[in-house]
Image: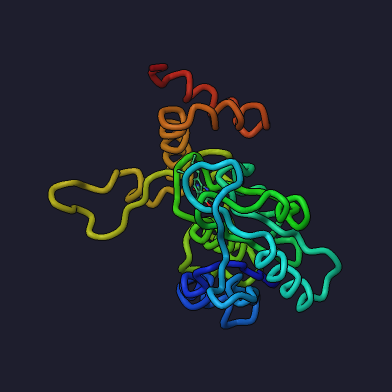
Length: 251
Ligand code: 9D3
């Protein structure tokens, strides 16, 4: 898998290349990352990458040409025919786990990070295949979303996670069960006067599984009732689940 990232701040991407799960996967050769700075594709003495918006208004707009040149350079280094070119954009489609899973099955993508108020629409029309957002909050550019996307995809690559890396095959998280995870505890058994729930100390694996499932259901019902409805529609809730949910306060 290969990611090409177009960004005015290429140094921001050392973390995903060098640290943690994604860093180890990179060292193992499971994926590769090349950054492309639009400034290197300018031809004027000031290396201009932005200009004022036609029609007026606040902020600056990224020039189409340096972005298109950078995308062309990335494409020229890639073996497959037409890679996805994903623009990180506050007006894009919200990125989710299903998109991460589908990216993890493919050859990677070219991720374009905007800065300033936005990018010239003609670059989007000519070069971009997908526009993705991380959610409804304002960032200062697309770099953090690009890092998040690569993190979410690379950890799904076969061999990227070892046993120490939590949620091992997603069997206990929202991706598969459609529910929020249950709480976790580790040593000591009593921390500042607060004990570990007795169910987890029982050694009775069936009871532990029931307790965790009920904790997941209760937390999801409280924080993300939308996920309960979705899990129900997807047929992910058992009769025991429904019975337990009926015992919870509906407020
Ligand atoms: C406050 C500026 N906004 C005016 C209505 C527009 C705006 C332009 C550029 C808001 C944010 C940005 C920079 N953000 C991104 O490039 C971005 C982003 C985000 O801000 N939130 C969530 N996902 C993404 S993906 C790219």
